Amino acid sequence: MSMKDVIVFIEHTGGTPRRVALEIASKAREVASALDGGVHAVVLGKDANAIAESLKAYPVDKIHVAEDPEVDAYVVDPQVDYLEAVAKAVGPALILVPNTMIGRDVGSRVAARLGAGLSADVVELNVADGRVNCVSPKLGGLTITTCAFKSDYGVATVRPNAFKVAQGGGSGEIVQLAKPAGKTYAMKVDEEVVEAAGELGVEESSVVVSGGRGVGGPEPFKTILKDLADALGGSVGASRAAVDAGWIPHSHQVGQTGKTISPQLYIAVGISGAIQHKVGMRTSATIVAINKDGSVPIGEFADLLVVGDLFGIVPELTKALKATATTHA
Amino acid sequence: MKILVTVKLVPDTNADKRIDPTTKRLVRTGVETVLNPFDEYALEAALQLKEKVGGDSTVTVVTMAPETGKEVVRKALAMGADDAVMIGDPGCEGSDVYGTAYALAAAIKKNGFDIVLCGTQSTDAITGELPGALAEFLGVPGLTYVRKFDVEGTTLKAERETDSGYLKVTVSLPALVSVTKSINEPRYPSLKGIMGAKKKTIAPLSLGDLGLDRPIGEAGAKTELVALADPPPRGKGKVVEAADAAAGARTIVEFLREKKLI
Ligand SMILES: Cc1cc2nc3c(=O)[nH]c(=O)nc-3n(C[C@H](O)[C@H](O)[C@H](O)COP(=O)(O)OP(=O)(O)OC[C@H]3O[C@@H](n4cnc5c(N)ncnc54)[C@H](O)[C@@H]3O)c2cc1C
Ligand SMILES: Nc1ncnc2c1ncn2[C@@H]1O[C@H](COP(=O)(O)O)[C@@H](O)[C@H]1O
Image (cartoon, chains in turn yellow, brown):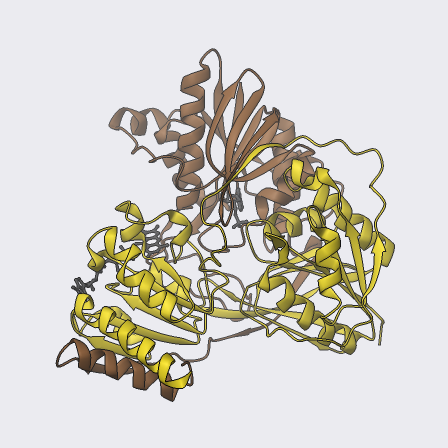
C-alpha cells in the first residue's frame, strides 16, 4: 500500500478555525491512517500563529503557518501559492479544503496548478486498496457518486457538517512557511465589510430554520424564526420566494440557486418544497415542516409535517423548547 | 473591449434527471436543455458592460457542449450577445472540471479577451469550481462571487460576497469574474433579438483547432467514477394535523426528543 499524506486547508474567521476546518482535519486523520501517512494543516493570514497553537488540540501532525499580511490584503492568490508550496514539499497527497466560498476557489486553483483531480462537495471519504474514494451527492442528491483520483495529487472540497470533530491524536508540530518567491498579487482588498459577525451561516449550522413565502414579510424572519433558530442553536434560512421578495439576503437561500446544506435538523416553515428547494436540503438528517396545507410536496419527503398556522406554532414551539431547556438545566 | 461569457447547457431544472447506468453520464436526450440559469446573470452583466463601455465592444459566448445544443446557444445570442464559440467535439465527452477548464481556456485565449464573465455554478454539476480553474489556465486574476462591479478603463472595482458580508476589491483587466444572482435581473430576448440571432455566428471549434497539448475528455480526466448509488430512501414521514398551536408545538417537541435532537 502506498504511503500518502493528507493536507488540510484551515479556513478561519475572527481568530478561530471554521468548524468545517476542524471537521476535515479530524476526518483527515482517519484517511491518513488508512494510507499510512500523516496529517498536515495549513494556516495562513491574520491570527495564524494563535490558531496554529489551538490546532495542537486536534489530530494534526504538522501545522504549516504563515502569518503574512498579504494573505488578507489580496483575494485567494496568496493562499493558493502557500498551499501549492506545501503540497509540492509534501509530495503526492490528498488535499482537503472546505466546500465554502473561499474553499472552492482555493481548491479549484490548487488542483489546476498541480494537475490534480478535483472532487467537489464531498460528504464521505474512504480508502480502498490504497486509493481514496470521495463520495458526493450529485444532481441535487438524485444520485450519489463515488469518485477516485487518477492523478498523483487529489483535491476534495468537503461539505460542512459531513464529519465529526475529534480531539487529540496528532503530534502538533508547528513549522513556519517561507514566503513563496517571485509572486505579485492582483486582487487587492480595499475593505472588508462584515454584516453578520459571528453568525455561523446556513452551510455550517447543524440546525437550520427556513422560512418561505408563507412567512409573509421580512419581520418574522427577524422575530419568530430567529427566536426559534436561537432556541435550537441554529441559523435562519429561506426559500427563493422569500429571498426574491427581499425579505432576507441571498446568502440565506437554500436550494438550487442558493446553498446546498446537510444540517442535522432542517425546519421548513411556510415552504411548499419545490424541487429546486428540495435539492438544496434533501440530505438533511431530519426534516420537519410546518405548513397550513397538508398536501404540499414537502410532505412527501419531510420526516414530520405538522399542518397548522406557522404564526401560532412557531412561537409556541420556541416557548416549549425554552421550557424544556430550563427544566433540563 | 472584448467581453467573453462562459455558458453551460444544462437539463431543465424541472426535469427528472437520470444517469445512464452503462455510460454513467447524464442522460441528455428527452430532457429539455436550457442555458444554465446562473449564466444568464453573467450574460446580462456582459451586455450591460458593453452598453456602458460602448465603442467597438463585443460580447462573445463560449461553451463546451454537444452540437445539439446550438439552439440553446441562440437564446444567448437573442438576449444580445454578438456571436458564439462552441467546442462541440465528441472528444470532449467525459471531461471533468480540469479538462473543461483547460479546453475553454484554450478557446478563450484563441479568441482574445479583456474580461471573462462566468456564472457562479451550474445547476447540474453544482461544483462552482470551474471559474477558479479557468482563471488559472488563462493566467489572469479570477474574482468569484461578485455581486456588483464597475469598470473604468482597465480598472475593475467589485464587491465579492463572503459568508459574513463582502469584500471591496480592485483588480486590473484582463481578468475573470464570476457573478452571483444578486448582480442583476437578466433581460428577456426581444422579438427583434430573436430574429437577429438567426443571422449571428456560432463558430464550431474542434479539439484539433485548439491545438491542445494534453488529452481532454474521458482520457484526460483526473478523476474517475467508481460507483453510482441511489440516495438513501427518504420516504413520506408522518403528517399530523395540529388541533391548535400548542398541540402542533408539542408534536414537534416530542418528535425532536424521540430523534434525540433536543
Ligand atoms: C431555475 C430556478 C431556480 C430556483 N432555485 C431555487 C432555490 O434555490 N431555492 C428555492 O427555495 N427555490 C428555488 N426556485 C423556486 C422554486 O421553484 C419555488 O418557487 C420556491 O421554492 C417556492 O418558495 P416557497 O415554498 O417559499 O413558496 P410557495 O411555493 O408559495 O409556498 C408557500 C407555502 O407557505 C404555506 N403557508 C402560507 N401561509 C402559511 C401559514 N400562515 N402557516 C403555514 N403555512 C403557510 C403555503 O401553504 C405554501 O405551501 C427556483 C426556481 C427556478 C425556476
Ligand atoms: N461546459 C461548459 N461550457 C462553458 N462554461 C461552463 C461549462 N461548465 C461550466 N461552465 C461555467 O462555469 C460556471 C460554474 O460551473 P460549475 O463549476 O460546473 O458549477 C458556470 O456558471 C459556467 O459559466
